Length: 428
Image (cartoon, rainbow, N blue to C red; front, side, top):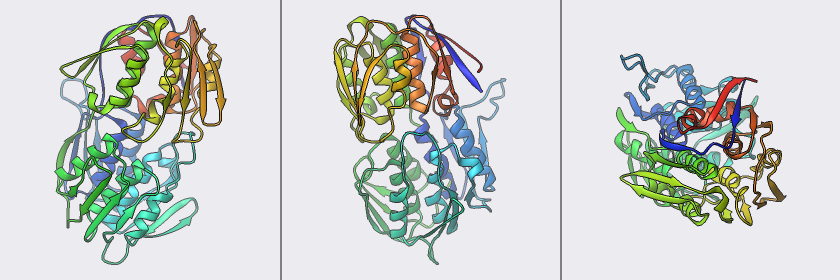
C-alpha cells in the first residue's frame, strides 16, 4: 500500500490537462452491455474503478480492452467493449466490493438478458447511499428482486421489461442512469420524472443516442425513453472531468500559483467557478482553457451548500473546504447529499485547520498557516482535500491510504508535480 509524501509551500505554475470523467466513464462502460456490437469509448481516464469495471465485464463473458497499445510504446486512453458473449450476468462481491458503480450493471443486464445477480455495492464510506430508488423504479418496469447472501437477485418478466412512468422521490444520478439504460431496450415508453440533470447523465444519454436509443428531454429533469429492439455499435468521447478540473483550480488557488487548466468544459462548472471567484481567485477563460491565479493570503470566506446539479457538487465539498482553511474570516459549509461526508475534517485539524462540526454543517475559520502532519484518507474526495491542504502547509505531510485517490483521479500526483509540486509516492 502506498503513501504520498508532500513537501508543502510551493506555488504551482504551468499548464495541465483535464482527463475524462470517472463519473461518466463508469455508466458508459455499463451501457456497453446493451449493445449488439462494440462500444468504443475515447478519452478514458486511467483509474482503479475503471479497471475494476473492465474486470467485471470480462468476468461476465464479454471483452473489455482498456488502454490498448498505441504502437509507439504507449497506450491510448480508450476502451473497446464488446458484450455480445455474456454468459454470466452477475457482479460478485469479490470484484465489486470497492466500487459503488457496480449497481449500474443491474438495469442493462435485466434489459438485455432478463436476469442479474449483483452484490450490494461498496465504495467510499461517506454515507448509506441505498439503491432502493433503483429497485423501486425497475420494479415498476416489471422486475422482481430477492436478496440472497448479500446479493440482489433480479429477474425481468417474461417478454422483458416494460415501460413505466417513474418519479424519483429524490434526485439520484446512478438511479437515473440505471433506469434510462434499462428503458432503452424495454417495451414501450418510460417517463423518468425528477431525473438527475448532472452532465454525466447527459453524457450517458448522448452515448445511448449514438447507439440508436430514442431519448428526449436530455439535460432536463424529465426524460422520455421509447424502447427499441436493439442497440448497435458506436464510438463516444467521454466528457472531461469537471471535478478533477475544479480540484486543480483549488490546488493552484491554495498554493498562490498561476497556472492554466486545459480541456475543462466550463459550462458544466458554473456554480463551482462562481464560488472560486467569490473567494477572490482570479479566473480567465480563453478558448476552453482556464487561467487560474491566486494570492492565498487574500482568499475570502465563502459559504457553500451542496445540492444536485446545477448546484454546488458534493464531490467538490471537501476540496473547497480545504481552500476555506486559509480564508479570511469564517465560512459555513453545509452538506445536504451524504450524511457522513466530513471525515476529512479530523485530518485537516492535524494540519492546524480550525473547523467545528455541527451535524451536517462545518464552520471553518481561516488560519494564517497550516503545518505538515501525517494524515489518513477515508474516501476519494477526502483524499484530494488532504492532498490540497498538504500542498499549502509548511513542511512535510504524509498521506496514507491513497488508493482512494487512485480510484477516482487520473495520476493527480503526477499532474500536480508537473506544475511544480513536490509529491513522492512510496510504500507506506
